[in-house]
Structure formats: structure tokens, C-alpha cells
Length: 216
Image 1 (cartoon, rainbow, N blue to C red):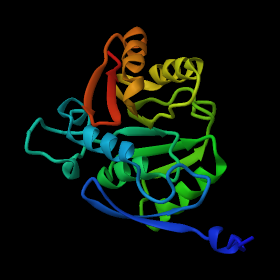
Image 2: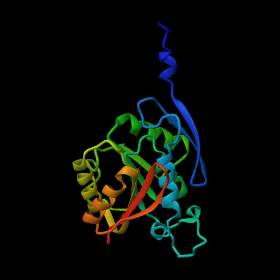
Image 3: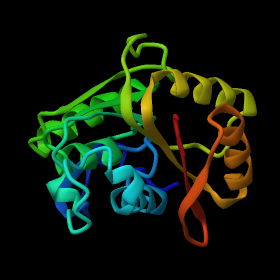
């Protein structure tokens, strides 16, 4: 039986990435979601959110259509649910230095790595902490934008709880944007239409769909 290089496998891996026009180095480890590369769903979500005019209005001080994600100026609270090692929340935090970005995950290893990656990338406007859904999010805290790369293999009851609590933590006119496998697109839209009264697919590829809803 060949010897398995356990000590080598336990060492941190590093991913170099270019997200929202910024360069990043992410430390990762086995056991976290997609530890060897930034997954396609994450990239699609960031692209869709950063290019969607409706979402950009949250951040823009003017409605100049030439304004890019790098020039978003208005202070906003953003939440990344199920942050993993932090690519979504940290990319938004670096692109929006005046925003306050919270990253939450129920996995303490994920939270540790998202904190490590905030330091690695000199990001000071991001705060990572443990929370099972919204269990440790302050009850009165409201967000302009909530994002998540949602897992595929969870129960519908989990989604119902998460979406209802998301509604409570969104500001009026705030957005909830998720990326899911395409097989879940119809279910996402149905749930968003029920709870929020609206939904829209703002991007999709052969595997994933990005669905948003607005608290009106």
C-alpha cells in the first residue's frame, strides 16, 4: 500500500484569483467547499451582481451608467451567507471599500479561513463570524444586499427558514441574490415570489442560475 503524504495534505493551499477587477490570494484547505479553485457559481454570482443596474443603484451616488463597480461609493451593509473561505464577501468588500461586509458560516474552519484571507488581502471592512443561518446575526441588523452560493443538497425547510430570516434582515429596497444549480432555479423563483412577491434570473450558464429578489 502506497504511503499517503498526510503532512503534505494538511498544509494550506493557495488560490490566486482575479475577481471584480481585483487580485486576490485565498488560503484554503481540504474539507472546505471548492478548495483548489474559485468555483464557477461564485464567479457567475459576482459578475451578475456587479453588472446588474438594479443592484448597483444601492451603491451608486448617481445613476451615471458609466459608473463601474470600482466606483461604487455609497456606504452599505452587505452579508455573505455560507461564506466558506470568503471569495464572495471579500471580493465585494475589496471592490466596495466604503461598505461594511459581514461573512457568516456554520463551519468554524470556514470562518477561520475567511478571517485569514481578509488579512492576506489587506481587507479591513469585512467581519467573519460563526452563525448557523441568522442564529448569531444581531436581530436588528439590516442589509442592503445579501448574497449566497446556496448548497444544492439541503431540505426545502432549510430554504424556507433562511429566506424568511433574510426578508427580516433586508432593508427596504434591498436585494437578495443567490446562485444555484439550474435544477433549483424554478424552486428559487417560486419561494422568492411567495415570500418577497418578486424574482428575476439575472444570469445563467449551462450549470448555474443567479436569481435575485427585492424587498419592496
